[in-house]
Image 1 (cartoon, rainbow, N blue to C red):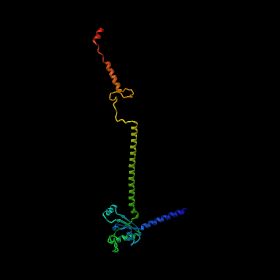
Image 2: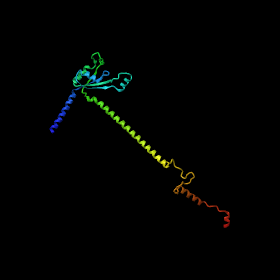
Image 3: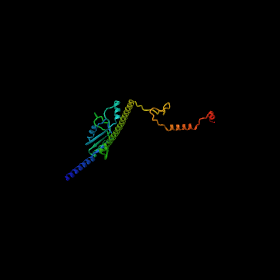
Image 4: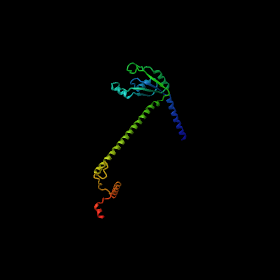
Length: 238
């Protein structure tokens, strides 16, 4: 079993090495500009005249530009801004790029829409197809992160709104119960003795500190004052 396991690992490593060697043999050409409204299938058909072609990718134009063109009555077909073509042979890709760059597409005159357009291509040394997808993967991840952030923010705002709605419902319910029982919330403090200075009903009978001080001062003043003695009372005494 151990020998079989080691053999399987060696086979997998050998397969990975073969894949790496095959990828190293491939060559990629970059087309900085394309004939207008050239589709990937048509480009593949053109490039297959020179050798075996692997993958083809064309970058579409901006959606706003296409929408504006259609709005003003232009061509409704998809237009591509740049493209990449993968050849299975690196040397063939280099030769095709050096030969066709700066030349016209050519071909027969009849029913050939791209005949007078020019090729603008360049061979990319040490460039892998995976590097082409890194930008698209990164943009998708950034878009996904921003979308999640917006969704979370909208969820938080929605939860806060619902909490405030529930709080307002509870407040209205409490006010309705108080109004039903006849309990009115006081708006301010009334005078201590009322409008006439009398104590309100249900007072506990306790006298405040100021009242006790006023009563004691009044008693002292009454004791200190002597009543005047009349002359008739003095005549009777003497």
